[in-house]
Image 1: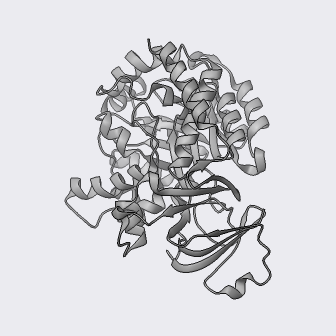
Image 2: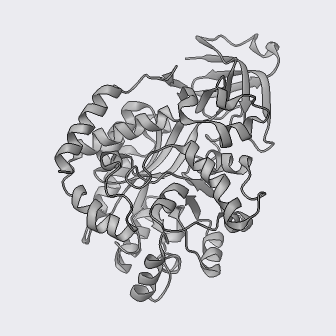
Image 3: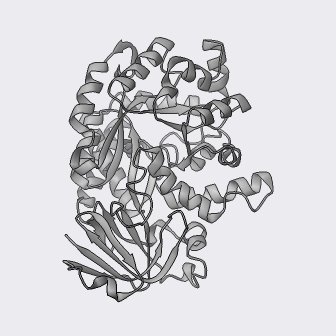
Length: 431
């Protein structure tokens, strides 16, 4: 379907940081065909749908670069705990009760929440990833999905064959909306042989790895006791960093760790809300950016956030570093926005395809209703998005050239049915 968006104010997130007013944007066969401020651009374009964007702001869809979408089932459960107590004492025992069908419904709820808050792409690692892929395929969202080479998170049993099967079935499927990486949960749930095996699997099928990395001080201390080196050092030693890597958190990095991550081209995912809520600390994002490290944003799961709202992550990312370092120039609005768009696209292996609004890019974009008291007057559109906008301001979402939400109505998900099923699942597993 060819879509024309007219009267559009557009934040492009391109290399020039162009912000256009009153522009025309054409979508053809799932790609951005043109962007222009002159009506002459329309003369050879035949639109099947015309969207009048007057009073709205068009921008790239947000990229949630680290989450566990099925964890919506555990939302608002086991709060105000340290990560180790939260995970081992509360979350893992409940997760043992979750069935594949439970994960399907929990993921649908997560996807519904993400689309309604302007997220068009996400990276997921969790249980029963076949069901996660099923939910992604049905809803039209874009995703980087990861499967563990260990059976049921039991490090004593390898299940690498299923990684190959999962990759073959889902990677680059549904018009390229799905990419598949290998899940390496962490250096504390994997031992050294498992880390080496995971790296070899990723190399053999020519894909990347998604890992939790140096989230807490205890993780770093335990790694030094277990391996005699930091998580970054053992990952480097075992070949984990020899492939593209999505490294979530990276809160506690030494100068040496920072150098390894920089030299190996590791993509770091900053999760400000989750790290604050679990008391894990605040990542040295300003230092990472100065070192040329690609930093993107993620929400983490709804059990440690407790939502999947990327507008909140942008807002926090642009504020906490200013306050901690008493420097209002750190992580400006434009930087935070790029972390949530173009940087996220690069981190998830979609660089050059999404993350900015330019001719030839895939049409993943959102329309924000700017006719709100908390956005008036706009003055600076980028600052308005990062400092003032709310997720509920997202009006329309287009992914791969398809309208998946319009006037806040989801087109590919039965929202009420999903909410009902997840409530019933939560009653069963949390009692």
